[in-house]
Image (cartoon, rainbow, N blue to C red; front, top):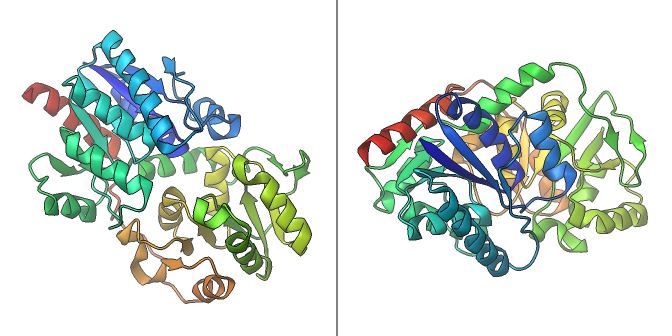
Length: 360
């Protein structure tokens, strides 16, 4: 088979790393990078350290409104599909790259396979939710990470093509945790280009969503909460938020916030495994906290992964200092759990793709 895989953002690179390794044993894969994440620390480093083959196509599309970005991607992906004529288009997650790939495929009558299918927040005000819904309703095969995702699809009438295969993010976390072990990965670099020493004890935080980091007020509350904790907080800052973060940290004297440039996946895995607790607004990091049996507070209005919410292991918080601190102080039960599969979802994904090809 010839499978054309569309990726564009950090979480997709991680999932593609484990699936592509299995896929390429017997099949041809054409890798298309839309360019949605373009910064070296947001893109190139992932291909290097995860040993992902270099993209066959890099479309270089980033920035602009959702409509502009998706429209450009749709045009360019369609051109690639017409040139490559793949048997199947493989998609991950819920980005603009995902939806553009799905629409381009279905218009050309090429079956689309959606990995991480069925996740729902319950609101169309979230742009990723729209991407998920559109992608699921034009895809031919729906591969779910969890049972709850499959139930959401069934409510929307998608039944016969939906299968629970587990989470390739879990596969990746297990695989790369072993590779990293107890050795710190890359050197942390602060926002001014200086080397940053990692303390023995720390919290790990990511905060990039527009509603949390796109204006001063919520970000001041979030950083203010972290600055009152007993240990420092490691905060890799998204490039678009750098100037705002530098100004707020300096103005408010948040000396316990150790801001650094974005880190690669291996370093992030190390930080997850060795931190005290995690505060995030990332769907990926809240799962990794669950995998590593770390307490997590998610600064977001909606439950993204219901399975992570057991026993206060993951709790939603408003972007308010008091709420974040209250949630961090709650007791939690941290234990092993198989809600996200057995660590071999990549094999199940490839097997289901083969079954789809045989049935067409």
